[in-house]
Amino acid sequence: MAEARTIGILTSGGDAPGMNPCIRAIVRTATAEGLTCIGIRRGYQGLINGDFFQMESNDVDGLSRRGGTILYTARSDEFRTEAGVAKAAKNIEYLGLDGLITIGGDGTFRGARELARRGIRVVGIPATIDNDLGCSEYTIGFDTACNTAIEAIDKLRDTGTSHERVSVVQVMGRNAGHLALYTGIAVGASAALLPEKEVDMEHDVIDVIRKGCLHGRRHHIVVIAEGVGYLNEFVKQIEEATGLETRATVLGYIQRGGAPSARDRVAASMMGVRAIDILKSDASSRVIVVKDGEFDDLDIEEALKMERSLDENMFTACNRIDNSYLFHRK
Ligand code: F6P
Image 1 (tube, helix red, strand yellow):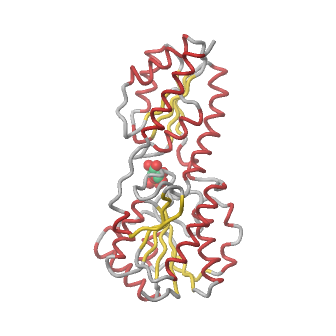
Image 2 (cartoon, protein in one colour):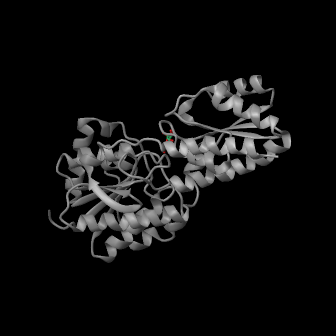
Image 3 (cartoon, rainbow, N blue to C red):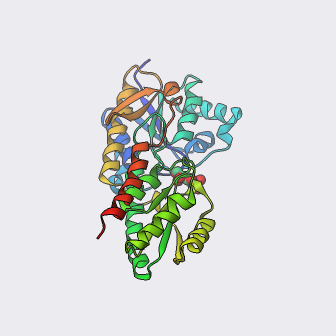
């Protein structure tokens, strides 16, 4: 495979803090090394619509600290059709792209694979606050989203403690509970409810709150992932069973915004540079991953066969920590 001279970049799916520093690393590295960079706006839809511009080094000034994505993002229904993929492939040819870097989550990688199957060289960079890709231990944006959720829940704890209430906090994660689990551990939640785990309300939530009360706990936090659903029903059940005032808070999209954390800025930058190295080598279509704590890359077909499971140790730890609180508190 020949070394790439002109490359395209797009961001797709839900935005994630760290996408901007990743774009910055790609554009700065590529232009410094003589490559031409074409920014594609609004993900695969922009590729279909011909929404492109040439990116220079100064287009990415100040992006290390900026959340969101200057390339905008979209979920494209048209790209899910054969005709849509064909249009996108035609535009890649028209632009003379030797390679395309796609930044996003599972849907973004699947889109990239469609292009790879048509002989287009792609490099996928994992970025989603859900951290739910089978191929990578880490996805850009997860750390910032956890920190945002933690900061918000710490504030909820103040008001919840003053009113001696139960706070049920919904965090994002339609299909994956990683964000809820990390956040739950970090804020010392009484329970973390995840889409991957069946919930035994009486045992996992009500009992823990009741025991906490017996031992003098005045405020309880339950973190629930969006994908579990039934938020208002849970609130009602907890209130009825415990007699404690219970309030729900949906954190929503604030978890996707904000300045990226150090971890996300560094991961984004390292992955951006690696994407350029891949396109300058003779490798075919790859996705960048974190494996055993190190940056690595895998064949895109292989990567998409891998499945992500929940960290059972973390789940058990989340419950064990709360039990130790019950037994040791004086
Ligand atoms: O980015 C991932 C994610 O935040 C999920 O946790 C959530 O379910 C989904 O995106 C919602 O995205 P949107 O409303 O933008 O389609």
